[in-house]
Length: 296
Figure (cartoon, one colour):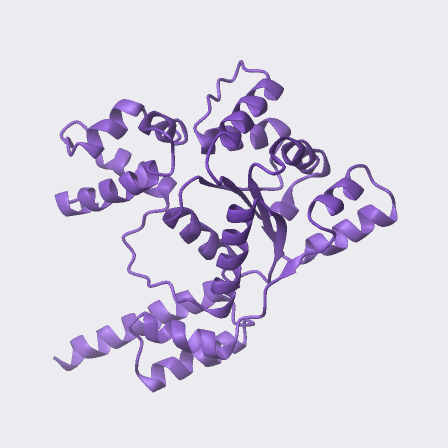
């Protein structure tokens, strides 16, 4: 495997520096990274790479969302809508549940918003998350201690206390519909502690609508409180349009009409899923490069 060049390491360092600016201190930033000490962060930021392995650089890059892949984010309609929701929640400390199809660009918008704004914390939820996992992930993201011996309640209180002291903090919970009921109910406590002090945005597919409807219909524990705290309404993103796909192709260097038509045709068969669109654009670019190389 080819090792990282100094230019590669400098690029990761720049991304790490931007990541650290989202925290009150570099120590807090290092707390949010799994298996990365404050000393390592300090050495990288000071361009002292000698004792830092390529594996450590790669580990940091993966956790801060850095990639060497050349991909240009195109501000589609959904990207602008999602960014508006996130900015509104951060500025006015609102609580919103944003709903959109899989592959419509929710996660991309959220990660880009975190990259470009201070005091934004992104938590990716999963169906196998236990309450302890959920609390530790929140604590880790805000740079709070996550000692395994700590009481969960104390850990959550400490993390929320840190968030409450920040200027315009925002918590983003991606794929929130995957959380089990007992974990999702933690949202009530989080809201109660941070109401008027932080913005909270959940994101998911529209499956959450049916789940909340069923929870309300059968009077399941916590669902009335959750429904009230999100304003009794979901914010719906639009379906990705053909024009969005066309613009993404052009933004990422695919300008030939024949290649773009292939992408558009493929996208139609997958409901314009942007993950699929990205894959097909890369395939078309590789195909064009191979044809160019063969011609030479």
